[in-house]
Picture (cartoon, rainbow, N blue to C red):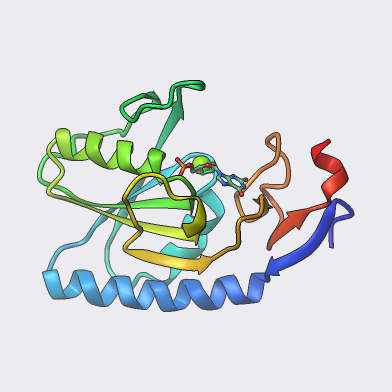
Length: 179
Ligand code: XMP
Ligand code: MG
């Protein structure tokens, strides 16, 4: 275990197993609709999760990435800036947004609205983690890996000051590191 980690919440083994289950479920759902989703990962946190998840989706999918940032200090919804946009038009496309964690829900609500405005046929969400206690916007992921308690988590894409994204598990940082 990394020296800065207080405890491991979710092991690599559990994450891989859950990705297998999610991949199977996603495959079945989109097969039933007879369409393949375009997976859209939100940079940078979704990268490790997306990389594992796609191995377990048994259909011909494509993926792309977006990078958005919220305007700090604004409390209203409707304030995100696109830093990296999608490579191609999404008019009529079924999108499966891939996120590391749904926290307040603001980011996903905004991105979803933006993609629908651009003509996406449908926008579903898959998130590795969900922190339901922190939600302020009425949004939920269609597919969730794990619910986590109201603690700041790191690893498997999640960072503290851009660090720890490469840890192969989800953990909680030692308290003294926040000070
Ligand atoms: P909202 O609040 O819009 O934000 O749902 C989601 C984004 O906030 C970040 N976030 C975290 N990052 N550990 C992290 O490393 C956490 O516990 C945490 N909670 C929220 C994350 O970037 C996510 O995409
Ligand atoms: Mg993020």
